[in-house]
Length: 237
Length: 237
DNA sequence: CGTCATATTGACTTTAGTCAATAGAAGTGG
DNA sequence: CCACTTCTATTGACTAAAGTCAATATGACG
Image (cartoon, chains in turn blue, yellow, orange, red):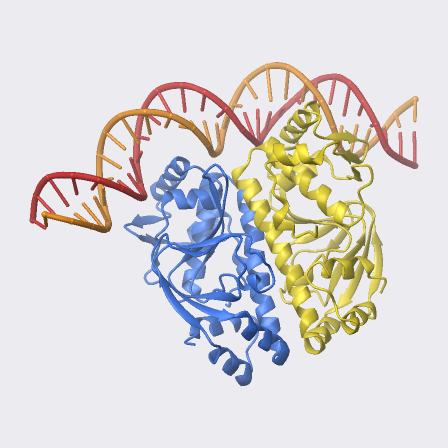
């Protein structure tokens, strides 16, 4: 597999031995591309492979009966999308592409092999799971204890840093294909309120939105306005 | 270690081999008791052991600068409190006792030994981490897309089932040492609003609160009123 | 009995949601 | 390239949910 992004991400926890790196590179994978809105994983399914996002952006969400939904995670290239589906069956949420996305799938048997042969690499995988959970916890704080403007500012800070970490920020700008409805489902807000809160951030010059592109002219200023602390992302430097 | 509750919990994923069970039973542990309010783990610490809750109830939370806090998890006996601290350093949240609690600590070196010698037991541990994350995701849905009364009803359903699973429900009743302030920090609500929402549930006869005890006369009725689906808890039967 | 924490209540404010209309953009087929 | 459809963004007017503040009650406990 051409899994550069994954290896790079896992090495944020600890460097991989050449053997472990080789094991990852030679993992059997199945590649597939999805367009915006396409379902990648359906809640309730019993997976026998786990997916890694190579390019694009995907949303993990839970749909409610009344048509509402709550987005519970967002992945950028290099992220495992559902490493947890290795042990959690059936899977508790759905996954859909937020934009054209390339997904690589690894059979669970191959992961079992890693557990057996590379205990140290196992720790890297556990770290990926733990990081996913840490982000989830931070989202809970964001939704439970922050108001709309600050919440959205924090989300943009997080996305900015994660995209930057994935090498996808140029001139303080990154691609942003989420609708205001999506952002609402992500923050537990209505799209109308997202619209008004975003206007506040734009008026203050903290965020510039143009087409499917967000520019953060001064990330330090946005971080400060959002009272955002990126420690939970466990990024290097 | 007297780790009956942990073994029972891990076997909800898959039965353990006698050898694996033995490995767990002979894990070196350090036992300690905490009283309500006492700090068990401080955010930012670099742990070299992970804690298991033997008896009692503990809260995991993130403190905000202005004195507010968001509870991000609650553990019942048999739960790992911070298995993720094995790989996530420093730890991103604090832990405190909600009531008198007995905690067993396992050195991370011992966990490394399990990874090396019992790949299958490793999967049980990953399952525990994945379940923790699944609960976290459901909490996000609860906080983001449900109103106060329903939110609190859902939380009580979850707590009821988890306590029951731990063998701590008798006559539809279980010990509940959280204050309304705690419940507010758990649901992203003010304590005043929790108070009023709880009154609604009591008025409807769905929940009876007496001293530090909650009784759910009809769990089916509460489940239905809360539109609660316990699938994410992955409980047996 | 007094103290402290917790629960409860009322009055009022703020934040966010809802509904419905309009405006803008993007995409499609001819 | 244009007409047309559709999705998304924006706005205004109004409603509802939840927060805040402050007072009072209740209960646990030394």
